[in-house]
Length: 315
Image 1: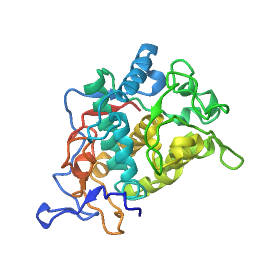
Image 2: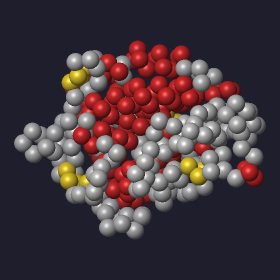
Image 3: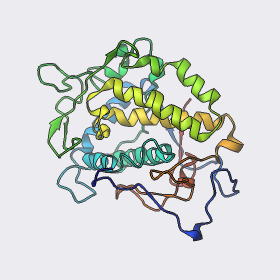
Image 4: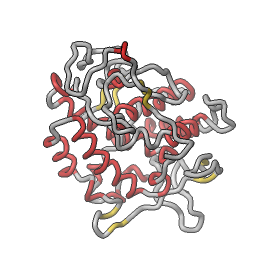
């Protein structure tokens, strides 16, 4: 683990009365009603004005000052935090809870700092697995553009043309947005064979525990979508690419869909290991690095209508 990497989960104290992975608690959140309820929609469900509004808000964040007292933008703050916690919030049980809160804070920043009136959209990439390059997500006018231009190495099409970023895997460096689409002989265009409807359906219907679900999503569709898009999405600074947030909103949606198959049990369920190999519990506190309100535990993330959250994702 490099020296820059911080631990995103602080150790619980003996006073917290934490649950062991298999224990039940009446305080564990179930699906509840909250107000005002935000509805997350799939990208292609948004009207054209709504898509444009979202993209403008994303670009707006690059003009807002850092919350972390850095010389770069608020948009760059998210990549700084994600990069520093890359080991402690990936391939561990906290991956789904931490990213749920991370993209929620991003959504709130769009609203509070840039006047965005919608909700964070998700990209249901299973709809595009048969022909991924034909997805409306790459639309050059009202989408996120496509792969890099061979002449410049940058994403040149769409509203994100000229989109500048400040973080790389190694040292801060001002650069354009980079994607490098993969056409793998084994995995297919953009690794789409690994995020097909059939693959995802099997994960959701046959995963019996939270940890099994988390492991299969993270190492399966989640990873292969990152690898298939390439460029920024393959690095520690994957959150440089605005598509990161729609991708993780989809991953978050899959977790919710799995929970709703057996809500009395699965809205309570959490298990697995932390970055040190120890047991992770719902009492672990999520460290968001100064991006948003601190002090929330994994317990607070088990429902999208409890704790800091009040949103529902359309299935």
